Length: 371
Image (tube, rainbow, N blue to C red; front, side):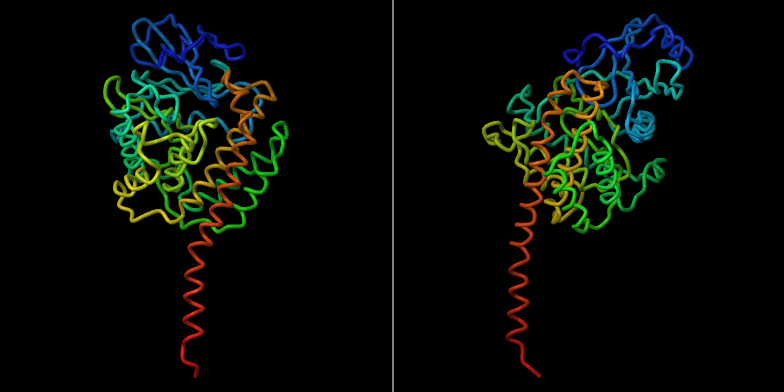
């Protein structure tokens, strides 16, 4: 992970003296002084490596400055990490949580630094071709394990509302999209939003949902494809497991210019196909198939575009976390266009499926005996 580290950037400085005092008071065996560096990956909550003697930690904080209501709740991350770790799910250990913004300027938590490999691109180009199928298999197994946990039984029954996840997400992200005047409006995004609001949502299901399950939010063992930690839980909640899974699949519909795999020769890279991932997830979760997959893909492209739209707004306001934020923000129009294209394609595929059924029904009516 060290290749993603750099100096603490301007505007994200922390008073290390106050932080050291807090750590000494709340983390067993902690001894300062401390040294801070900042992770450059990610776009949401500022993340730092905290070094104190021979010990290494990670600090996640709420960004400073003006933020949209309800965004960047780092304390939710600490809640879910603590509950999942008790179940043996691969997440970092949380050592302490601070709600007092006076300590470093915003709420934060401190967790263990998990050493290992992070693959920063969807094709896992830093892995060997022989390793890639096993990495993709580990991703599916990890997501299926998460979705199989009983939220109520592990103390996360109140972590979100179990019903109406998809409509609520559409409402949440549309509200943030429409409220962020600094980022501007987009016709494709407006069309996609109208399409989602007009189409009935799939039947409810509920599970613990990560909300951002992609390869660069996973840490693998240094020398094996073992999944050792799932990180960046800012968007986690109780949600529809198939929406969570479809988010993982989005890269198969996105071109490489947007960080996806749609124009990559998967076979030559030894990367499992989208269909192979669908079949693997269905086997791991006992499903026969996912008939609403196209809807969930379009829904997630809207949601992802809304997230990037939020980054665009933060760039405009000057409180974006990542130095790559401006580049990411520039991808918003292309993502919105892709989402709207997926929605139109979903309409076409739905029509192709339903037309034979309608024809059969009309034929049955026309040939039935008249009374």
